[in-house]
Amino acid sequence: MAHIIVVGNEKGGAGKSTVSMHVATALARMGHKVGTLDLDLRQKTLGRYMTNRQTFLAAQGLDLPSPSYVDLPEVDHATLKPGENVYDHRLSAAVAGLEANSDFILIDCPGSHTRLSQVAHSLADTLITPLNDSFVDFDLLAHVDTDGETITGPSVYSEMVWNARQLRAQAGLAPIDWVVVRNRLGAQNMVNKQKMESAIAKLARRIGFRVAPGFNERVIFRELFPRGLTLLDLRDIGVAQLNISNVAARQELRDLIKALNLPGVSVTF
Image (cartoon, rainbow, N blue to C red; front, side, top):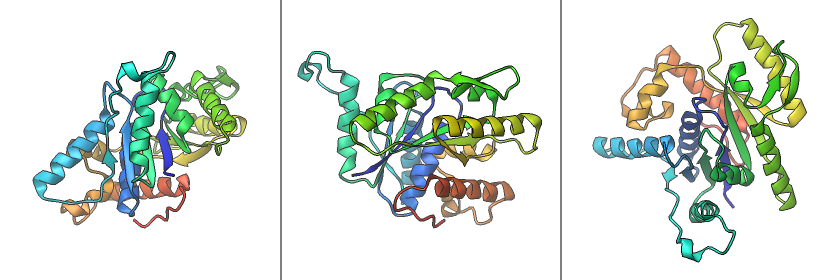
């Protein structure tokens, strides 16, 4: 069976689609068969990223390792039994269609609470939650007191992950490996950064997730999107000498892939 990676939280702008595209493409470049789904049926940022990649590579005559991408299939409502949810069937059909030819299936969730996102989380073998290094984003995981240090309770998103874990346990499936990825870390070791690090460490022990390094804020990520490229594709399109920022970003991606500890993956870039 394919290992299912879900990238999700309930807040936009945390870098979910950037993380999704780079993780999926990195796995493909290491020789793994990767299928992808975008559950943000309105925005479809990952879907557009993948389309941009196909268009650019075709125009340049390039054949680079790439994940596959499919849209959720439509389902005839007449075939549904009373009480069945059409989105459950669409997601199940998409996963089943990818599974036979995939080592990994990566599912990018929307930055909001939807039925599709809820079901996807219960399918996750590995859950990646990108988080900007800010207490505004930390509120996604838990509520804190005015001191910025005392955790007063879990958030609705943490409760959704808990429910997904319970569903998997009831079905006899392996526990979700939940990895919170700290994105857009500041270069300076400021007080806010130190408080965030302390709060995340406390919460990780309390509700059971691991913490992994993410990406610093870099212009390169915004520049890559229109061509559907990732950091690992730069040399293939003729960038012979990477600048210091690009080299550092590649190392961040390498560190993230290592931290995910995915089955059968040995980092080779």
